[in-house]
Length: 374
Image 1: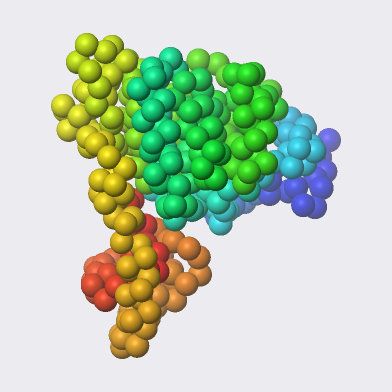
Image 2: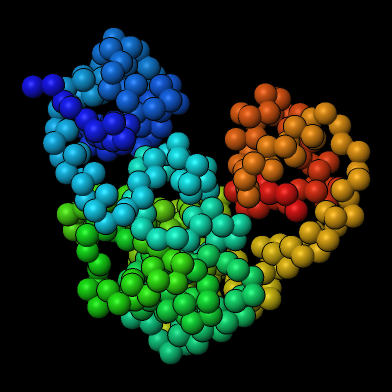
C-alpha cells in the first residue's frame, strides 16, 4: 500500500526515517545531505545513484531503498506536534551551528524551549553527580559573576554539578538548556521534573537527538556528551573522578577544538583527580577565576569592539570584504565553512579578507572558526 503523507510532513518523515536506516549514521547522513540537499530526495533516488556515492556503497544504498517502516515516523510526528517539539534537521537554520563543525554532528535534534541554540556565547558546565560543598561554591560564584555576560548555560540535567549549573543559571537570570540522553516524553532523573519546567518557563530548553520512548540507557550518555561538548564555545569541568563521564565530555571538546577549563582540587580528593589530570596533561586550562576565564575567551572586549565598530563604519571596504560583511549581516554568527560557500571566493581570499576586517574591528572571531559582526 503506497504511503500517504500529510503535506507539511513529507520532508520531516523522511528526515526521521534517515536516522533509522541501518548503517546510516551521522557521518553517512551528512554525506547524503551534501549530495542530495534534502532527505526526501535521498529516499526517492535510485539505488544505482546511491551506491555510487563515496562512503555509501551497495549495502547502505540497499538499506535505504528497502526501508518501509514509515508508520513509526508518522507516530513520532504526532508526538512532536502534540507536545510542540521543534525538530531541527542538520540543514535547518535554527540547528546549533557550532555542531556543524563536528564530524559526527547529529542528523536530527529534538528541541523544546525558547533559548537561542546559536547564542553568541555558550558554555557547558559538567562534573560529578556527587559534588562536594567546594563544587557548589565554585558554580555559585562562577554563575553570579558571569550573569552580566548573557551567556547560554549548557549541562546534562544530571544530579550533582549539572543540576547546580542549571539551578544557578536560573537564579542569575541566565538561559539554560539541558542536553538529555533520552526522548522528550520523560525527564531523567525524575526528581528534576520541576527543574525542567522552570528552565522552560525561563527561556531555557531541553535538547536531545533521541526520539520519544527512548529510555536513558547507559550507552546513551556518552552519545549525549558529544552534543554537550560540541554545542558550546568552552566546557568547564568542576569536580570529576579520573573515570567520570565528564572526562569523556572534556576529551570530546578537545577533539572538536573547543576550549576546556578545569577547576583544580586537593591532591587527596578523589573527586578532583579528573580535573587535576586534565590540567597536568595540558588537556584543560586551569580555571582560577571568572575574570581570567572571560579574558581567555575574549569576551571582556565585546563592548569595546562594538564601540570600535561604530568608529570604523566609514572604513572603505574592498569588494571581497563587502561580500563577507553582507553574509555576516544575515544572522548573528556564521561559520567559516558557510562564509566560504556563500561568498564564492577562494578560502585564501576569505581568510585574508576576514583578517583585515578583524584588524579594522569590524569582525569578531569566536572559538570554532565562527565569526560575527563586532
